[in-house]
Amino acid sequence: MTTLTPAKIAKLRALMRALPAALSARIVEAAAAGDEAMGRLLYACTRDAQTYVLERFFAPVAPLSLDPATARPSLAHIPPAMLATVWRWIGDTLAPDIVSDMQARCADPARPVDHAAEDALRAQASTRIVDAVKAVADDPRATKHLRHLLGVSDFRAVRDLATILRAAPVLRKALADIPASIPELSEDLSKTLRDRYDAACSADPDSGVWFLYLVMARLQRPWGILRVFEKIARRDDDFLLSRTDVATIGDALLEDAAFHVSGFADIPQTLEAARDMASALTQFATVTVGMSREIGIRKDGGWGRQIMTLRQRASAQMEAVHAAALTQLDKTVPDPHKPLPARLKLSGEALEAAASRMEVFCTFLRLTRDDASRAAVGGAHSAVLDRVNQRLDAAAEALLGQMRSQGGDPQHNERAAVIARLLTALGQQEPASVFLRRAAAARAA
Image 1 (cartoon, rainbow, N blue to C red):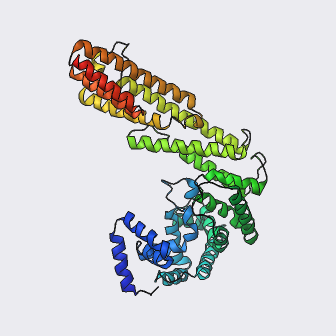
Image 2 (cartoon, one colour):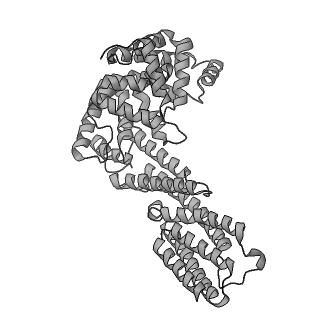
Image 3 (spheres, rainbow, N blue to C red):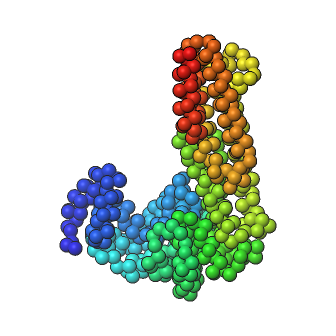
């Protein structure tokens, strides 16, 4: 590919960055499929120059550097903010020469990447990071200053970053030809990963755990990595697992599960929140059930006890949601068999607000119906759904009777619309349509 002048690269960068992000991403993907250099150039032009240099230097860490606010912990082990801080530290004081060299190598993104040379820079940075951390180990004041500079409470993630940078060539070789996305972990691929793990550990003992982390990042079902564990550890459960790479990844899966539990810790306030919380519950159930199925985790093992604790926490959180849902049900669709004071009869804007609130609960209950049992709250969840359905059925029949006997009260139409809306939120579109047709017939009678 012809080398572009800095001026032309600047013009191309301005063009690419002016495009909508989704469009520019599609252009980069299409270009990379036919020409790796062109894809690299166009991708670089979607970023400002300094961001591209940082991303390329830390490319070995990228799969584990997602935003911790939205990504599970195993994918956010070394957050973007830490990478930016460490990069400034390297450029300002630790090793400005490394930054200058990397900037020169990235000046023309279309130029072929010299992996060996860039890995050498990463290894140098790794050594200087480790040496800097060691240098303050016996000086509390210096330790505090460096922690403050890097924005960390301890240096664990900083050391991990240094390890991955040093092990970059070993990890690249171990991951060669492994699919970027793995929907299902076959027996053959499991064996290949076991062999690659063994080779990586032979080349650099510290690289093994990061190889497993990076593989897990590619798995659509991350707990499938446990299948590789069986080949590495040759065990059927976690009862005797020591502090090995296998145990570290198992702990990472449990951290992910805890992250997903936190995703449905609150009472849903909006439809979007209900969907997000339902997704978190699904992910939690999937991870914990997946772990148990893969290697038959024992309840009295370390992981088994942690899973039970997380399920108890999930159960308590769901109980709070269930209680709030039933309370809101009483406000929105009162029991027609119990007398209701006039002050509690809602209409107009008050009824609309109550219906919107109950619609959120109905949406959450519907979306979590299939996964509640896997999250150890199935019985209670089914009971709440039954109560909601029974109340809607009873209210519908009572309202139809009132519409036939009392004529065209506008409030009847409001309440009929609410019942149909909640039935729809529960996934019962056909019963909602039938009810509305019955209501129209009752009004006309």
